Image 1: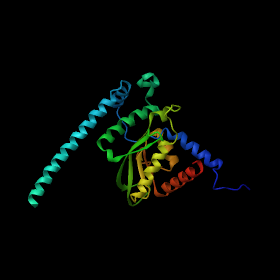
Image 2 (image 1 turned 45 degrees about the vertical axis):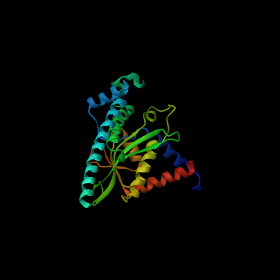
Image 3 (image 1 turned 180 degrees about the vertical axis):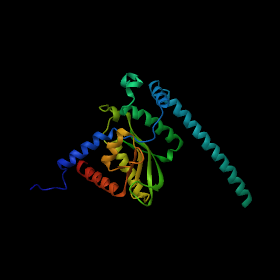
Image 4 (image 1 turned 135 degrees about the vertical axis):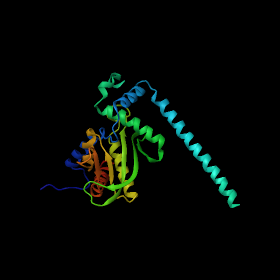
Length: 84
Length: 162
C-alpha cells in the first residue's frame, strides 16, 4: 500500500498542475467582438497606432474627471458660503 | 510580426482571442481603472489583466440571490499565448483568478465568481472549478465550494513548489 505524503507533490498533483498550466494560456473571457472591430484592433496593433488611440482615450477620461472636479469644487464653494 | 501580420491567420486562434480581449481590456481600464486587476512578474511586467465588478443575481444551480464578483474580461499577455518568448511566464491567468477569488471572499461573496468564457477558454475555467450554465452560452460560475477547493489546491501547490 502506498503512503500519501502531504509534504511532497504526488504524481497526481503534478499531472493536475501541468494540465492547468497548459490551459492557462487559453484563459480569456469577456464579450465577443464584431469582425470589423477585430479587424480595426488587429490593424492598430500591426501598424502601432493603438498606443496613440489609448493615449487619446486617457486624455478624454482625464478631461471628464477635470470637469467633474470643477463642478464639485463649485458645489463645495456654494455649500461653504451657505454654511458660513 | 507573428502570423506574418496576416489577419486571417490569427482569427480563431488563441492569439486572435488575445488581440480581441486586450483591446477591450485596455478600453475598460482607461474608463474605469478602479475595476482593473492584474498580476506582474518579478520584473514588474504585467502578465495578465482583468476587469472585475461586484454584482448579484440568481446563479446557476442556486435558488437564492447571491452576490458575486463578475469577471467581465480577462486576458493573458500575448507572450504567454505565443509561448517561448523572453517575457513568457506560466500560470499568470491562474494566479490572477486566484487573487480574484480571494477578493470575492474578502468582499464576503464567499469566493463566488461569474464570467462569460469564450469557447476555447472553457476547459481552463472548468479545470479551476467553474460550472457552465447550459442555459446561457459561455456563462460559467465558480461556487463557494469550488472556490474553496481551488484556493486549497493553490495553497498546497505554492507550499510544495515554492
